[in-house]
Amino acid sequence: MLFDFHVIKWVDRGNEDIHLISSVTTSTTTIKKASRSYINRSRDAESHRGFALLQSMLYHSQEITTHYWLTPLLSFMVRHPDATVQAYFWFLQHLDNQLLCSAAETSLACRTRSFMEDPWQQRRLVYQDVLTEPGGVNFAHYWFYRLEFVLWHQQVRQSEEWQRLRLTAKNSVEHISPQTPSKRDDNRADQMMDRFGNLALVSRSINSEYGKLVQQAGVPP
Image 1 (cartoon, helix red, strand yellow):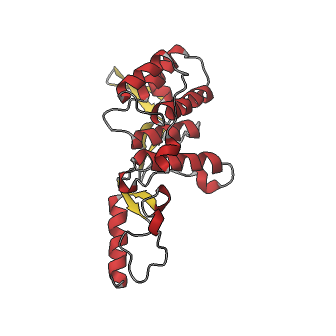
Image 2 (cartoon, helix red, strand yellow; image 1 turned 90 degrees about the vertical axis):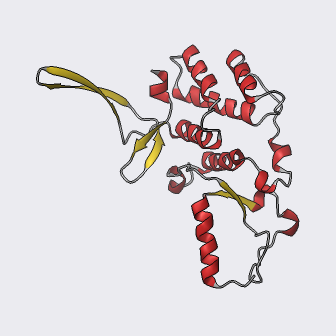
Image 3 (tube, rainbow, N blue to C red; image 1 turned 120 degrees about the vertical axis):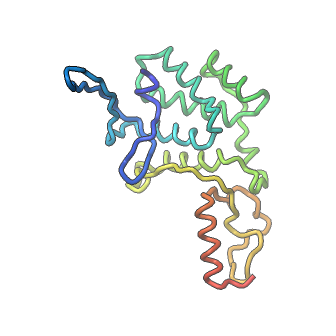
């Protein structure tokens, strides 16, 4: 029941499927004296936006078959079934910081287990070390998704556009200032080429589309 009430699901919104935490209702239909019960998920309920968006960030940034973050979150919910959604959100922020931004001294599975035993533990964070290195296309996708969430968290109260932010699947780390610039490029990064600030996580379809636009523009090599 906690999973149904508090964990994101894919919800059909007509022209797209999106992540939502939506209310669940049941209905009963009688056909030829036989009753059947159905579970209905609301399409328009979108409360607790931050909690849902953080889950969506973790969903997209972690291995699809090993969503380790979900186990300690559910464990925390089971231990505190009457806590508010805001309390669950605070715990998930703590879990994200301490589990996925900390030093990998043991396997992710082992570290996840430790947060079930000691949920509020503090670990040595490494994001400053990681993000200041010239990682290039080897930067984990997690850091790009996390940046989107942090920007949303800081800006959502300032602009309606941020309230409509959706996190989508992206799988290609690309340079903003290109590694092989053309004669028309005036945004060359040089020493900052492989730094995090000169990189973006995009979908392969978008990357291919940009490449075609460059070709159509007749940009010389």
